[in-house]
Picture 1 (cartoon, one colour):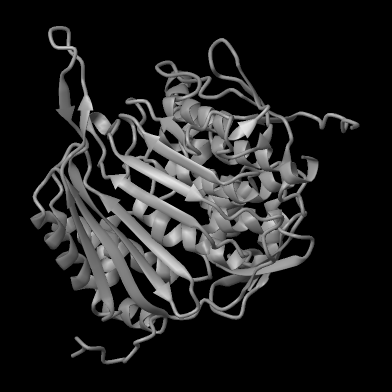
Picture 2: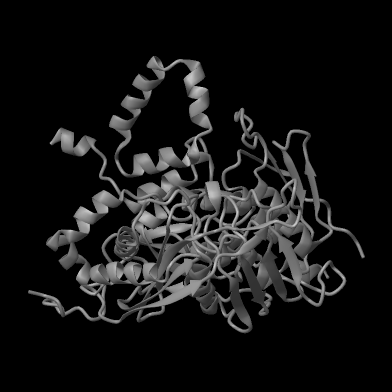
Length: 402
Length: 107
């Protein structure tokens, strides 16, 4: 077997879009170096706990990856390996990889789930990861993550339009809100992603359609279930005007009990991650999904009525932006389109979704990684743009080589 | 007529396609130009830089903006007024399948 010449190292600067770049590097198999990660921060320079945890996860689901930190943690060199998934003998026990999230993680579990879902279709074996430990927050967070419910109801169904639909499941085993100081939770989530493809199908999504129903999940962990009812009532008060077919599920659970060793009592445990939240998903007749997410802040002081309303307004805003993809799903959809076969895929995107910094940066990063540029043209609807993306057929690098 | 001509029409798609891959500009700048906010915003930037000393600037760079967010930060007070305005509500109705213009709760 001849080894291909090593691709040149791509260099990036800054902590922003770190995960996005690591994912693209893994998918395209190109080594990257990211420098000046929070280099100007006096209090916490270098990689944050959630980023280190994500790198560990990458290491766990790939084979042959090399990760090198600089002494201060402000520079990372990442040479991707093959995405092997939860294959036996690669650190998976009984086909499941256990990923422990540290207690000082301030990001929701969707921070890990979304990139993992992007990698999973291109894995060699199925992906089966159990997120556990004192840092798993299944609710949405103040730091801007969606809840695990939204991943399950608004992100995973998107893969169907790429021909990836079998054996995909996200189990929320134990719920948790954000813990004290916005850190840690103690939830448990398992992602099974068992449909691996050679290349995702070319996508043509031109018609956003009309919203026909709204579904949602209200959750209370460790607090009274009445909070759910209040959240639901407030959200329905806003949404009934638009869609009578609104149904919001209610889930009440006790707070997770995590170990909190003290000097006198090393076996001490405490409850963490108390709070409530709401995840809303609007479904259009064409299968397009818009979502909204909100949770009570760890400091408290927000009545559920206010949060329910805010969540409903957020959903209306997402529907108003229009297009076939909301700003939450846009990076996932656009990246998968770029990974597709060498054909032009088209998707209608709202102008405000396209004209947001993360999407712009994604366009640039994709080009840096050797993908083709996007074609833009005016859409039929008001405020809509048709984005045409030529896939590069790099989809499953791992399968091609192995 | 000159003022109208001189001001570029904001939100033009062709304009964005041109700006998008211009690596000289940051993504924030691209969007500002695209939305036609360039003149005022840039003016303000210059003013600010002149006044603030270096120490303060450095602290500003490690703000919240450095983190990736998925859920955007929204001004909920503004949204509340927006969505209680009858006009906006009516405008959005056509995006919903059950659009009866005098909806179930309509007056």
